[in-house]
Image (tube, rainbow, N blue to C red; front, top):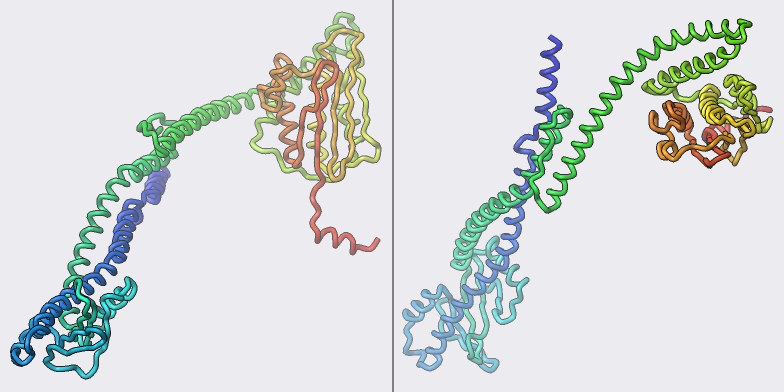
Length: 495
């Protein structure tokens, strides 16, 4: 059934909006934290293993120096070959020597290796050399012979030790394994603690706001789906309060829009039928004007004007109720002739004493939709006539003037009258429908429709002046831009 299909679609949409655990912020945060801690441990591991290597060699060299000091004060012949081998075996070395005042003296030796692969001076090994040597021993060592030299304690002598790196590499591998295991444990503990802290401080509130937005989007009219701020004072607290305020504002706006939409639909239906009734009333009023009775002649013009205003009101409501105006079909229009048509449609009664002045230059052309521009000028003109007709004093000048001038690629049209000017409330809500009415009982639809039509042309409608005796509206409509290719094609055409 269609209802079931809609429900399935909503469920699929909800599933698409739910973020899987493997792609959630929490999982990414945990993995990144563990990775960064491991990188930090690696950066700590390198100098650590280098320092371990130097300490291991320093301990062996220190022991060798103690043995060498004893041997230097004893008769070398008193130490048998077996004893020498036992001493060297305890150190894992091949030979022990001492350098004093530039002379090197071999004290103990089991077997002298033919080649020494690496020379290590413990007193002149910097951090980078120590790290490079440690990596070399870890990855390529195990069968190399080392010559280790350096001073020991306060002695002015320099001791030498010939030793293979087998035991050193084995000890370094054990140290590296222990450090790696400890680093992994530390990284996991640190990542868990950091994840828990950040999840409580940031991820959980962000997740709550995300869920609130998704829930609110599904049913914005439900007040229970508005997020409830937790009263935090940090940036996330501000975001929660702003989100709650935005949701409340949007909810009120949607409720108002729905109310206006329902009201507009009802008004449109009423106006549609009312326009038909008023059309019949117009026909009857026209016949009444032909009756010779003086009483009828007195009231007929007033009745006709009242019906005309009612018809104009109905048409204005229906026009504003359209969802969208058609895009302007722009052509070159002779503005003076269009202004004459406007005054003809307004049907200004001579008894009102309103004078019309068409001040548009004869040769002035405007690039616009003739029908839409006609509606704009008609709305402005009708408002001006109604404002001037409200003054009953006969000595007042009542003049409606339409003028225009071209300023480069922009045509500026002015509609001015000598009426009483717009009240303050009307100026504050000038182009807002149902709020910008200049007279009691008005709707403000005329200016709202006119502004919308002018904006569709890429132009502007503005109130230039409004005071007692002078109200001026200005319409600025730019010409349509011409592409370079069209201009070239026009120049190539034969005259």
